Length: 71
Image (cartoon, rainbow, N blue to C red):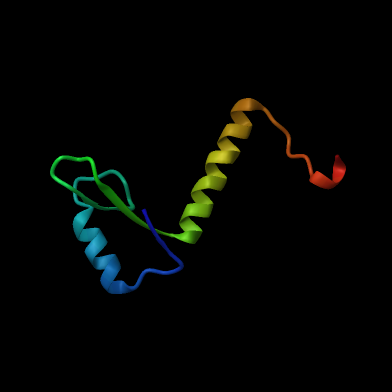
């Protein structure tokens, strides 16, 4: 996985060209045997994706946010 703070227009154009037929919006490259997969994303996308996953898991597990200072 390649992570950057920003992706320029040329890179966005190349990434979109590679994504045809793929469900992964960050897909960039996969070799013929399928054992190497490269994805490109911004740090902000990675953080937002993980926040959504954590929120989902918290809802499933019915956990409550507790501040460290409250312990």
